[in-house]
Structures are given as C-alpha cells and as structure tokens.
Image (tube, rainbow, N blue to C red; front, side, top):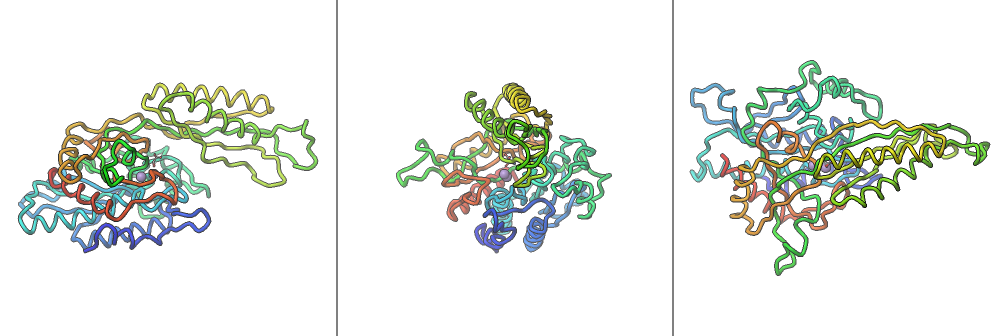
Length: 424
Ligand code: HGY
Ligand code: MN
Ligand code: MN
C-alpha cells in the first residue's frame, strides 16, 4: 500500500499552474475532479465505500462488520477524518491534499492493526473530502462544510458566481448534484461523532526557537487549539471610465487611485491593531485595459482577529477610509461582506485526547492557535472537531513554496494513526 509520500507524489502533476507556479485546483475544475477520482480509486482500493452527499462532500466509509444493525445505525457517531482537495490560485501542494493523503495512509495502518488484533474498533471510520474549502472559485470559504452545517443559506450559495459567470447551482448540477437538496443535512451530521483534520502548518509555530531541539528542528506535529475569526469583504469603487490619452489629469475620477490608497490604508490600520491581520490580495479593474482609465475597481479584503468585535471595528474604520479616499478622487464606494466565520475554540475533550495521543508519538508536540480557516472550524458549531498540524519548515503557505519534508509527513501519519486509534 502507498505511504503518504507515495500518495502525494501520485498527484504532484495534477493542476500545476505554469503561469503562477504552484497549483490551481478550483472546485469542480478538471484538476480538482482528477483529484476526486484519485481519492475515490485509492479509497476503493482500501475497501472503503465511497459516496457523495447532497452537498458534494465525498465520504469514504470503513464500515463496521455486520452485527445485525442497519448500515445507517452503524454509521451514526462515526469517527471522521479528511480535509479538502481544492486550492487557492498558485497554491502549494500540501494545503488540503496532505490531510486527505494522510487519512488514506492512516487507514492502511489501522486496518493492519485491526487484522493483527491490536485495534478493537467500536465505531465506523470515514475519510471526508470537502469541496470549495478555499472559496477560490465561488468566493465563500468552506462552502461544502457551511452547506452541510447550515452555516450558509442554500439560496445564497446556489447564486454565487465564478469569474466566468457560472452559478454554483449550474456547476453543481453539471457535476451530478441536485441543488434543491443542498443545505443542512441532519442525517450526515448525525454520522459525525468526532472530526479530526490533519493539515500542513501554515505559519512558523513549529519552527520558532521555543520548539527547536538540538538538531535545530522543533517537533514535527502540533495540536490545534483555536482558529482566528476571519471574513472577506468586497469594495466596489466606481469612477469615470475614460481614455488614457485624451483625459487631462485634472479631469479624472480614477477608481484605481482610490484603490491604491485603500491598500495602503488597510496595511496601516491593521498594523496598528495588535493581533490583527488584514490583506488585499485581489484587485480587479473594469475593464482592465492598459490605455483605459478604469470605470470601476473591485478590491477584496480579508480581515482576521481573535476578537470578532475588533474585526468588525477594523472593517468599519477601513470602510470610512475607503469612503474618504474615494470622495477625494470623485469616486463612490460600495462595501459588501462576502463571508464571515467567528473565532473557533476546538472541542476541549477532543483536543485533550489529541494531546495525549500525540504526546506518545511526537513528544513535545505543542498546542497551536491558527490564523487559517478550515472545514474543522465550520463544523465545530455542530460536532466535536480537532486538528493536527504538520511542520512546514518555512511556514509559508498559499504559495508554491509551501513544503513538508517526507519524514515529517510520515510522522504526521503516525500521530494521526494514534489519535484515531484512541478515538476508535
Ligand atoms: O483562508 C483560509 O484561511 C483557508 O486557507 N481557507
Ligand atoms: Mn488554504
Ligand atoms: Mn486548507
């Protein structure tokens, strides 16, 4: 059977982005569909029963031996692990797929332990793959888990559009889903007793001096404690589209100028607020011609802070600054909140279990908060969830430079196996 490194090698050419570098695997793109196919085959080769639910989430079931109960009864309160396969544009190889590959590799070990009698299972296990975790195609992060948990109205989700104007409803339908059946799914939620997601660490929490041993490398695995509250907002700045050559500098209402000042204001405001993070990573001028003064510029902002009230205050402050710089340029600005997830503290009992099992496998494994959002964060409102992080030497993520060393990936699987065994 494949180890986690073989599994990751098998998909290392899927969805490569020659222009940006790294990988671009938007949900329901050919690249992500190829990864779904890879997952389905690998899971079926392990004897797992693969199903897709109404929200497009894949579930690979390691069911219990037949004991007279119905299949549905044996699946209630199951142990679930897994992650996502979609990526940000030009993303790294590990964000998402490492959790899925590690779950498959963990099933190999757990199955062999059941065979040799060192594992007595009390419940079913499932490996889940959540669609649109990054929100890169339809703009809302964790769209699949939000639909499952009822954290987004199906109508809003179905009307989301991608850059080509396709609605999520159309794309879901084209991929065999029935939009009318999407939304909170009590039956699927009842099957999740605990959800444990392994994920590449997306910061330097495992590489600071504090955790570095004599070999200059800290422990390879950490247990998650919380997820920073985070949201996405869109500023639409409108001015007067015009000719770059015939329009005098004194005759302009150029939204690009206001957008540039907004970017600087966001950096300044967030840098002045401890623990805050605010980013503008996407600016789209309309029409976007070199010899054209834009008529409109859309600017997307990502703001995060442990205290939801502070996040709201920061957004308000930046909104005021946007209105000011827009007015100075003879432009107008409209602000739209696209998504928001409050700060999440993981289930304390599950976190303790993960700490105990991880202490056996990776002594000194720390407990880390994360600034990155995850499906485990969205599901935390409905079921107990927890996370394990695997060392990323540079801490860089959402970038082609995201990296996990083979040995650390294997240690991550060892930690996941022990964590799942304790919970099974
Ligand atoms: O944006 C995030 O934090 C996550 O990677 N979706
Ligand atoms: Mn990500
Ligand atoms: Mn991720």
